Length: 291
Image (cartoon, rainbow, N blue to C red; front, side, top):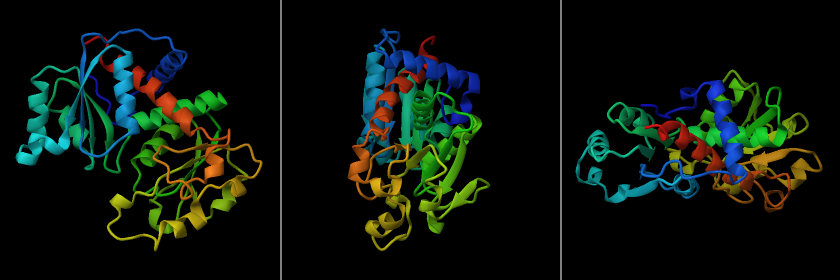
């Protein structure tokens, strides 16, 4: 059974195929290929965009979707995650979409189920469908990916989105620069800086990240406003430069990106949301269409 645990589970040619399929879905050309298939969502962390995106993607392809409330699941009664997965698998779903605060959970579940496991985010490790939709969004905007210059700005160390995007975008030849305060910067061989202003004249796109306050053991800043004074992407900072702005959501307005820039036509944030449905449709088709 094929799973999607991390972005490296697909080859470059398979990812190109996914993007081509997503482009077709963006044009409104799809049918109910997954009629009679069943998809289960198992989210142990809160989610709005990702969960809704997967639900819409599943329904557009004709599959049935079952949402399990993790807060009321048997794991709260002492059942292990593996036992939960094996019990769900015994009901013969075609795919289980999993989000968990602990890194590695989707991988463990994939070793104990027959259904396809799709990682919807695990800890600070991986969020493969987000990276795939971001790659697709950049390709739709710029066409050629190789040689594109992109800065990732914010809480990189604690971000599964950053982790997945760094791995995926560099595979496609994107030049990635990391911009973060010292406490948010991971160990890296990539070009990196603590000075946001230093990169604005050399990038084609900026991907801002949400500060992952729920993953901080101690407060990293006295306040988010203190953080924003150095790392908020503002219209004043960007000026009239032709720089595309991305964000995986949810956006902390005027902390991650200011209001004016979010409403600017250079913002691709809502394009990312739209492309997320199409990319997740492409992933679902690839993983379970022929099951």
